[in-house]
Image 1 (tube, rainbow, N blue to C red):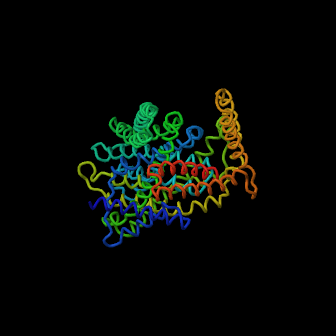
Image 2: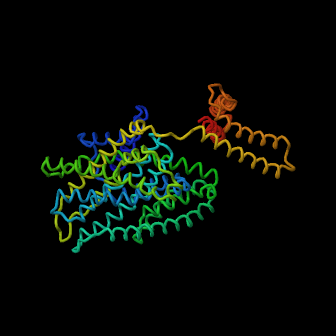
Length: 525
């Protein structure tokens, strides 16, 4: 019973922290981490020891899956080159830079275990990147690149970590760039194949299921089933989940009914909110456990911590600027994708927040090296924790200011509205043509009502371009219809209270009114 009470307590604190962050206008991940740091030293507060397997197999897959579901496959494909340069190239580069720095401080340690720490701190976190980037309001392309990077880079880092641990815990102990590249390709390739198989199998099941509840249940099973299948053949579970999520999300309009899509969307928004809040709170709560086993001299501890932090921050910028501009010296690349303004790599370079995956990977470091040799494992965990806190709190808190100072060219809302209106015009024309083909024999009043509905949706899209303070016809409709819905609800509630209708009738009526109100609110956004 006590573990269940603790879980409920943590979820309640995470929910309160997220609500407080919205009230104060702060980023929820940062506030929750700080709240966890404070609570970790409160006497009597539950002691939490994070299980790396729980994070890597129980929490990360659903969060990656929902992020992949919402990722635009055409946008991902369009930005594939910068995404791979960050998710593969930068992770390997950062890991070797950090590993070299640590080895300079501790030359008595095998380079392979130092590289393992580099792999631990190399990847920015998917949860942190998504939560912070969207909240900050960065341009759409930067958000796509950051989210794409965070979806793939965990696979690179975890494979590199596995190679480094094997080298550190076996008698040979040797590791080279070729070994890393080969292992990354094999694991990533296997993950892609498992992910594609997941798209085929679960896409088939989603298409055959008509019950929204069963669709929802299957959607929850998918990320775990794909991860387990990939891990069984020693492929990348992260890559498998991402590929499956991208494929299912891209095909979702063809695989699920409207009722299923609405329910799945609401379900995953709740799951993501709870898991993200829980993850950042748990990261902060680890501080007491992390500092407990440290026994290094204070001067050495400060020096190596500062050096690792500096290496993590600088490595990202050292890689990003050449990766952004050197490739565009090739005319064909430059013609297809012109060089962005310098503000883009600056903001992307500063958006390297680490998160729970880094902590889970640190906790998965081996207890001893080859031959039972001891090494400062607790120091390595502390270094990973310091990287998480500094990048998440410092970079996450200052990213809005950096984005403002950089004066990034924003996405044009007028152009977005114009594109949406043009497509809605085409959609309306297609709807009217379909109606004209099928209208024979239908009541004239019904046909006219449907034509009016199509026209009102088209008018609403063009009204978004108005840019005037005057109330548009659609806004007036929404305001008046909302009042009418409220009046209808009162009548149904009173009828239920006086026994004129049973509860079941009230529930059905409220459901219809709620759906209509949800549509009104969406159209007013």
